[in-house]
Image 1 (spheres, helix red, strand yellow):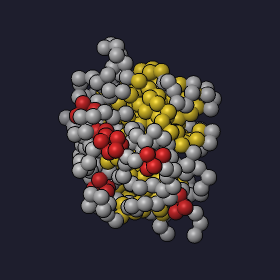
Image 2 (tube, helix red, strand yellow; image 1 turned 45 degrees about the horizontal axis):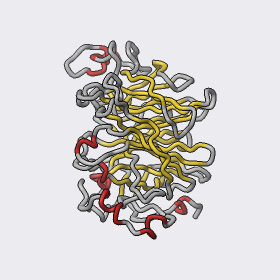
Image 3 (tube, one colour; image 1 turned 90 degrees about the vertical axis):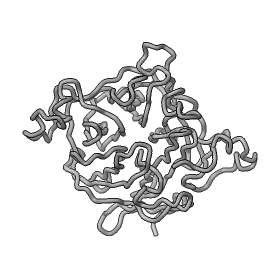
Image 4 (cartoon, helix red, strand yellow; image 1 turned 180 degrees about the vertical axis):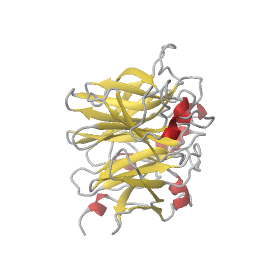
Length: 366
């Protein structure tokens, strides 16, 4: 997945005119400068729309393999049009306290932020791995702020739904077994790795994460303040070995986009559909079409990317953008972004066609 150029070097050599030129379109996999001319550093991210602005939160990567761990924290950018982004600085900083769970060198992945209108707080959840423990902790973590751009105050991390059974529990789920990871983790709490957040109509918020050694996804209802789990959750895509969840709701149905589990390497995306957010979800196959000419990767490798978020476009009807990351584990700061419009065919099937350049007019009535 490694590009033949280094974005760190490229951003230094960008011309003054190109750095500050207003962008009017998306160009997937290309360097994406912010208002300072620096490639946007918000990987595995998500978008919050609040009071007329979009806010993009993501992992701040650094040079070299060390950059696969959290050396800085969660970065934030703002935009009025989705093409041009202003650097709002680091929203959540890692700690230099060796006793902190988010000490420098831990793993912070896929941060997502939602706003709670009742408490007037901005709530950030992310996947956390404790420093020096690889990916064994598999915890979810929460932070909170009074302002959208932060700074966010770290609260805690844990494995969710300890001692709880899902709403769709089956007798076999409760039988001990070497590969019954759900049963193994009932008392200690369920694993929570790749994750996203979703706020449904009516204001209920849900946490969706890869659990059970990434073999099954858990969809969990959050408390009214969005700061904890209610213990109400479901297991979906059971034993399908999926991660990188992203979700949207269209015409009363939930579309759940995921990737396979191949580490940093790209694989085939798939989506599933349900009438209830807790499922059951019907697998619908790969929505991707065409080939990314920058790397020659087609639908079988999701154009070289991995799903992270589905963004509803404000002010446009039936308009959603699929956000993917192109990971560069040897030099994580080189990672780029693939944003593509989601289409729906006559049978309401999701279709994502690769486009070298496109703008929001694709969502205008034809």
